[in-house]
Image (cartoon, rainbow, N blue to C red; front, side, top):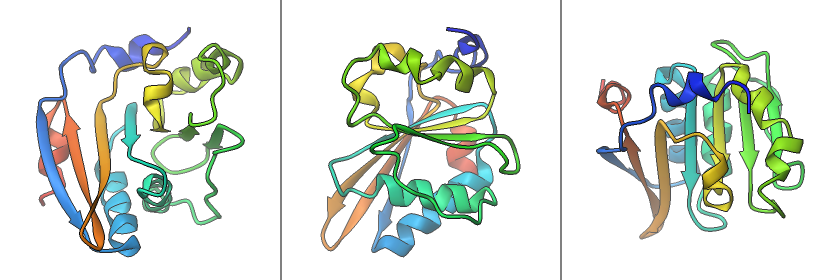
Length: 166
């Protein structure tokens, strides 16, 4: 698969740095997505974990808006990938692997091309094909908490998580 070296060269370390955010509602999830978008540098692989309805696509919508995308953001549940190639700071590819039938489909979908583009990959349901994906630089797990949700972020490099505190 062409291009993964650009991603894996800075992703070998374990995701040993962690930060948690309490999100009271959908607006807070959108805001967190926008905050991360403003601090994330390409190339980046962001795994989004959580049950159905946990807010993964909502986070992605906030992320894309935070990168300057002003059009609609739809869930790639059926298309598997939605490319946003003209956003400032490099392309963003939003993948949803929930309906992936076979991990070999990733090659047919052009994963190598997305990796070669040097942008940011937002990957929902990465556990469906984790062995075929480059390691995450940032992992965000969304879980229910009270009437809202909690976002647990883990990263190999503490710089991004520290920047979210500024």
